[in-house]
Image 1: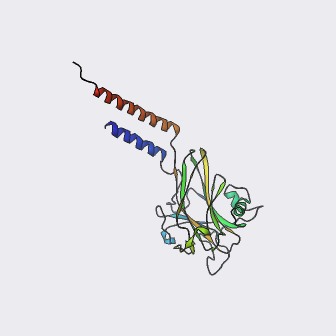
Image 2: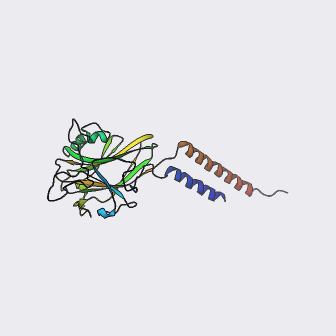
Image 3: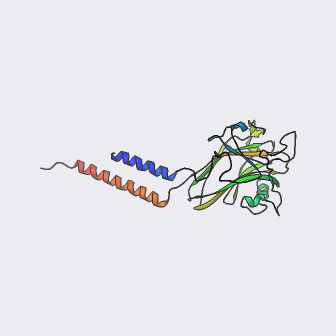
Amino acid sequence: MNITSILALLTFTLFVSTAHASLITNGGFESGDFTGWSTIGDTLVVNSSFGVTPPGGTHQALITNGPGFLLYGKFPGSYSGIDSVYAGSIVYNPFDPFLGLSVGSVTQFAYAIGHSIAWEGSAIKQSFTANAGSILSFKWNYLTDEGLPIDFAFAVLDGSLILLADSSTTQPGSGTLFANASGYHTFATTLTGSGTHQIAIGVVDTGDSAVNSGVLLDDFTIRALAEPGTLLLLISGLACLCTLHRTRKTNTALPLRL
């Protein structure tokens, strides 16, 4: 193997070390269930028969704020058989603590973004370990029957609430029983600390509990930075090989002396 091939191999190894496979358990829900995840409310794993093709693999997660009240003949019950949970009280609700938040946080967030009290919701979450600088990403598709931006889907990363979508981001025609959809989008963020992190995704009714919304999720991954020792070793190896290569070229160029 020549020096060029060795350098290419080490460069590839360095790339793989900085972007290795996902540290999220069952990030594509390919087990067909929520192995590795904790759930609350109306959550289930579906395939393309739901009406939307998963962006990765054959499965995707569905979270809804069902059942709400029967309206216009739609959604008399939850999809999973488990109803979403009460999220409206600023004194007690099971929803906010599940997300790692103080009671009333989701409603306060809803007010802050121009919505109303959060009535009911469902969510999934998972804890994972990663280095600072690693990139967490996942794909989401917001579904709703709301004509106004009342319900919304959100993420909670290490205790920080992040809006994903409401009705203002959707278009008619979802391919599912929901009237409107955003289509799949990618969320990505850089982690700011090393150690244990938690990601949670949820959807809530706000203002009323009569009309349902949901969010499809898939392809949770982490582009993980290599450990500092691994990076140092690889960089040192590259430097040594470059020095060796320059030395050999210099020696080859010397005139032959008799």
